[in-house]
Length: 98
Figure (cartoon, one colour):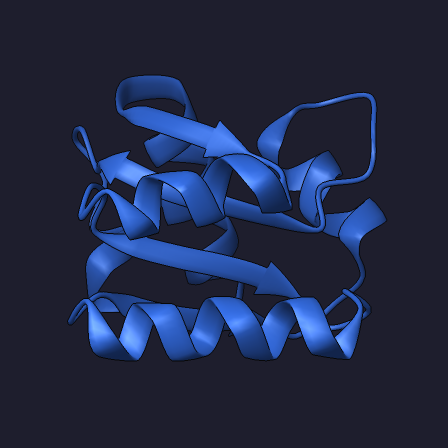
């Protein structure tokens, strides 16, 4: 995982609008909201594939984070595992370019 990607994810969390969790991401995707889904590498495969397919149909970006949910949670500054998150608004970050 590049340091640049971690920095942009953190900047998006700090300055943009983000939702965390599989159900929240799925709900937002089905409503046509958001810009990008980020999923950790250890997220359950069937859930990851479901989000990836919905993102493809809805023309949204999907990024597979190359580390665990624990590391993604740490990057986001959260004291819990983040298996998946969705960027609703990127804020001042360039996360959509990773």
